[in-house]
Image 1 (cartoon, rainbow, N blue to C red):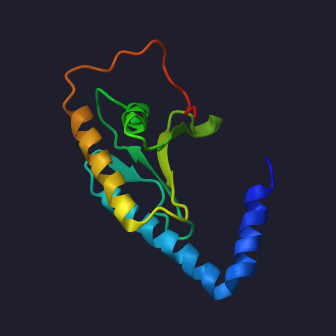
Image 2 (image 1 turned 45 degrees about the vertical axis):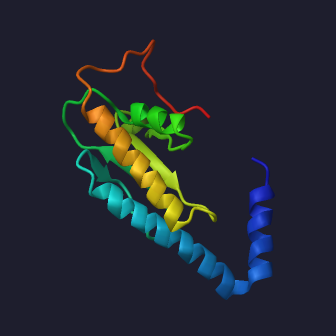
Length: 144
């Protein structure tokens, strides 16, 4: 992978200093923990991580029979402009699919609330399906 992101992080650290860089990162962690705590309140989900150490968290579907999966939710959110990927875990846990959010600088609390609203609306839509969404083949990963 290109090193541009690492160079940008280094530049930001030099420009902002330790305290400034920490404040920026803490803001991202605060948004991540807010989002994860709200997603944890939604009935179909269990958190895999909380986003309280780095601003990344993931969740999975609770066990049970549904007419949808996390790939369906990812597709529905993508139609609304949100890229919230669903991924299978590595080979030894390939039956587990998680969805994750990476909170980056620029994802404000207001924007996070809009994302939560979209997730809630799409979960409501999916929960009310009478049958599975037809698809040509089973999905096994997220494609950008």
